[in-house]
Length: 120
Image (cartoon, rainbow, N blue to C red; front, side, top):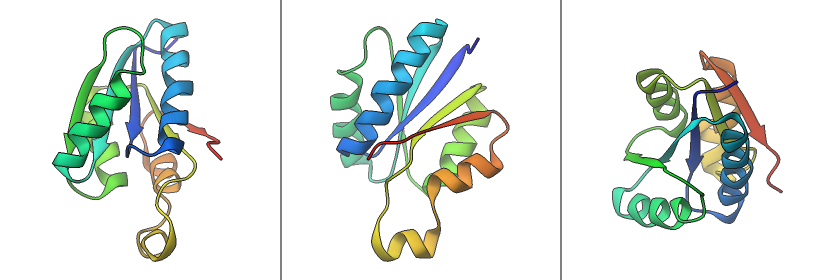
């Protein structure tokens, strides 16, 4: 079904829930997994190490800086993924209202399927 799945994480417990569900779906499809963190590189390195350790099998990992929704879409396009998995909760407070909901932006602008995992 899917050949390459992009899982996103910010290192939070809710993101870990989305990664868990997404990795199970990827395994069931026999898909390659790409794990992405958008944000501070030092935080990204820690989040990717912790999160990739929770996924069975081979995982490619990537950390980039920038606007989360824009970078998720850019990486998905550049890497040729056919499914993006994001959690329904992430940013909170004023940042969410200023920047908008990342899952909303990704789902409306992706050129592939988007799976939004209810994480709370």
